[in-house]
Length: 118
Image (cartoon, rainbow, N blue to C red; front, top):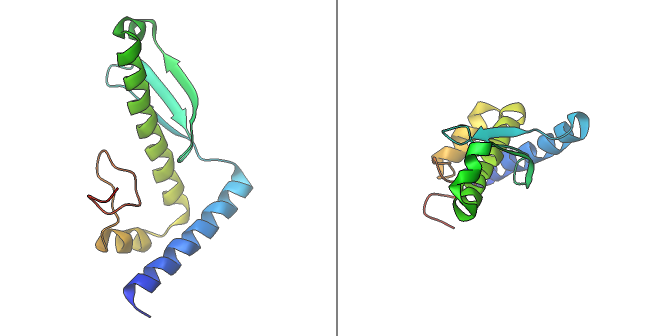
């Protein structure tokens, strides 16, 4: 069995454990806020926001800027939830193995795609 097959088996096993975990405990939530705290979002991994809080000060941003900020913060909240999910079901060695073959997440990327591939 080569490295890719081993990694694929680890990913499949992590997926199975994640599904079992969610079935037992419910979804894992992530949270993120804008640097000024004007926008806060709670989300699940890969899903839409479950909660969006906007301060009165954020309303002065204008509709387009506020929408962009909500989308930015929502992506960060979803990544936070994904990270929390991984921490609960994947052993650190599996995450390291994925990173070794190019599956890593940078500051503005979702986990799962090699850098530069979209």
